[in-house]
Every structure is written in C-alpha cells, then in structure tokens.
Length: 334
Length: 243
Image 1 (cartoon, chains in turn orange, green):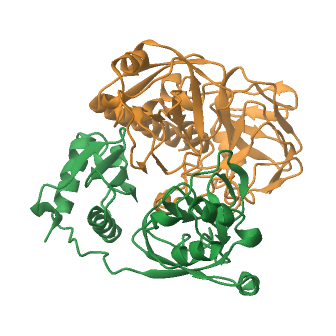
Image 2: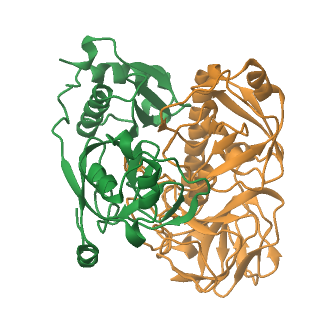
C-alpha cells in the first residue's frame, strides 16, 4: 500500500514522538512539534501512539490515496478537504482509493498531523522515524516530502471494513466516510491565536536585570517570521542580564527560553540543538508545548508563571487525558 | 571514594521533565571526571522513568518522564527523581569510566582543505608549518559532544595558535573540516554553516547515523591530530570507516 505526494506544501515531513537516547552524541530529538496531536492521531487509527505520521506546516500538501485507508487528521485546522469536501478532524476517517486530500489554508494553528492506520513503512534510524533535515536522515530519505514522493504504508493493523461496521458507518457514495463521534474537546489541545504560555523560571532567571524580569511577565512578544522547527524567534522589548556573564554550555530542552546578547528571546522547539550557552530566563511547561508549537508567525505571546509542582500536575493531567482517550477507543473497538 | 563523600554537586530542575546535576562552575579536568563517572554509571544503571542524559562541561542533565516517575500521578515527580538521584550518587565511583580512549584523527592541513591556515599563522606570527606542529603536537580532551551530531568540544589547544571567529560565517563548511575558534579547536562531522577558521580536513567519518554508536567520539576520549598528505587523504577517503 502507498500514498502519493502530488504537491509538497510549505514543509511536510514524517515525524514521530522524537529520537531519544542520542542527545549525548549531539543528535537532536526532532519529532512532532505538537507531539500530543501526533499521538492522538495515531490512537484514532488504532496505531501505537509513537508511530510515524505526517506533519503538515501552514500550507498543506496534496496527497493521493491509492488504496482504501483509515486516517485521522489532528493538530492545527488547516481546512482539510477530500475531493473538494470538508473533512472533520480529531476522528477516524475512512478514505476511499483514488481520493485526494488537500488543505485550503490555515484557520487556526500552524501544524496538522495525518496518521494512517497501519502506519508508514519506512525504516527507523537511531530508533526513530523522525526526519532530521540538516543531517539528512530519518523520515523519507532524510528529506522533506516532495511532489512525486510515494510513501509506502503498512497494511492496517485491524480489518478496516469490520472496524467501520463496529463504528457505526454506513455505505456512502462520498470519497470518504467519517465516524459520527468525535473526541471530547477537553481531551485534546485547544489552540489560541495569541496565547498566554505558562512557564517556570529558568536556570538563569535571577541573573537578569530587574526590568527584564518584570518585562517577561508584563510585556507581549511577537513570533517573527524567522521562526521554524528549531525555534520561535521573538520580538518585543529586549531582555538583558544585570551584568555580562559568560556561561558554560549545558543541555537545553523543548520550550527553553534563552536570551542571546542582542536581547530578543528564542524559544527552543523540536529541532533545537542539544546544548546551549545562552542564559535561560524561563522554561515553557510540557502541558503548553502543543499550544506553543501551534502559534503562527506574526502572532503575539505572553508569559505567566507557574510553580514546578503545578507544571508537573498539569503534565500528569495531560497524560491522564491520553489514557482516557485510549480507554474510550478501546470501548468503541470492543 | 564515592562522589557523595563531599558535598560537591548541586541539583536543580530544567523544566518539568529534566533534572540537572552540576559539579562546579568552571571547565576543569576534575569536574569533567565527575561528569564522566556519573555518565558511566547511568549507562550501566539507567533508572525506571529515565529517558536519557546529556553530559556537558560541568553538568549532567537527566531527562525523565514525570508520568512514569510519579507512577501515574501518585507521587511528586521532582521529589521522587531527587530521591532516586541522591541514592544513585552514593553508588557512583569516581573511577568509573576513567580509562581514556585515544582516537587518532588524520588531518590534511592547509591548501584547499585549510583555507584559513595562513590567517591563523599570520595572526600568531608563526609559519603555517609551526601552526601544524603545535596543533598536531597536543592531546585534546573531549569535554562534551554538542552543537551538531558527533561534534566534539575539545580542551587542550595551545593559546599560541588561537584565532578569532570569522566575522561573516561561511554558509557551508564541508564535512570533516578541522577548525579553530578562539582557544577552541574542533572537527565538523556534517556539512553545516559556521564561523570557525578552517585549517585542515580529515577523511575520517566522525558521524554515521546507521551505526549503533553513531558518533566516533564520546565525552571523555583523548584526541590526537595526525598530519597526512593530500595523497593519503584521497586514499583514506575511499576507505569505509566503521567505528
């Protein structure tokens, strides 16, 4: 089985939940920018949540399905259509052979995920399917998807037709059939256009000037168009240290907010380097990674502080939501 | 001696899913040896809920899964991970992981491979030959791997051959390039933009994503640069390196 990319889109890549275990060798984590959306997309089509899926950025690709497939689209609303008809997100969709998936344009958020039941048949590199663009490995030959690419797919883990019956689907002349239910909205991320992002204080927070510290909480920052999978580059008031301090490089992570000497903060994302030497004023909490990854260039972000304990409670809550989704799907499957 | 005999490390969180162990505030061999010992211990005894760790000059950062560590929310994840780390630190032997591995890196200096060799020489009132003999005459310690896959941060370069970064970084630095920036020297394992002064190139492949151990160099290794001719470079380029 396979699907064909007929138009590339802005940046369409194969990702999973990330390449872990090799950061000590300087190998970046990569993976989905909105990992929660990718995990849920996989669960909706009965895949393991860590399977490979397609990440679509702002301007979507055109994808032709050569066989019948069960897919799910999650993440940003980029107005997906199959054969010209709007298709619902956050639920399984049965797509008939020959039909074409495309995206009209961003309504809300930046990145959508397409999971295919059975998943994509590509080899893992260093235990991950994620595309590492700069080092040119992972994904489909280490590259962003291009027009003409054919992506081999595995057979679905479950019998799709049997599944359709169980999920209350009837015959239809349409190019696709949606299930009639969708996930409860409180179980998956909501994306605000100009969000307030929750952070804990960063390792070097106290080294910043008093005014910089107060700007962080009071001011708004714009996500510039120089932002990419590596980082959001912000623009707004400049932040500075009380005095020049040369830091010794150490590890950074998704959501680390670092401030280079020129004063504009940078928020590290999926394709971040493994280590850094800039002062870290704050750290975005994991529960807000989805929201963070989905902010469009040009939009405004503000920051608010939570404690580490609150951050970890919210982390646990997010995982409980995923567990609840799994249980709900198990019930629908049985 | 165990690391716990002296209160020589600090712990603090890096966000809600990582903890940093810091062993000092400067780059030194003794701090590096502690980092190395903890890394070797974590390789042998990874704990349940640990995802991976990243050693750096003065720190070891351990990434963990709060959901797993907290047993699905039954404990405070950070407090739990602090307990685990305090306990494992009592078992870390500083001798762990100390046996140094020496890696020779053949380098063809100057010419098309080292377009900035003359600049580095002029900058230090030396001849290019003197720069080569100083650069190849030292042993270097791999303090950490970062910046790019397999890129070593090396300590031990002589101040006599230091040189500032280029004002305008090159958009492409070829794979295998050996460079100098300030008092640091390093080798570029993949093609990437960069501002280092390039003095030579190695035919050795420092990074291979399809090997179990993708990076040739590891934190703690000792590196020596061995000058080779252009002919040798071309010969060795043909060889397939499996490390």
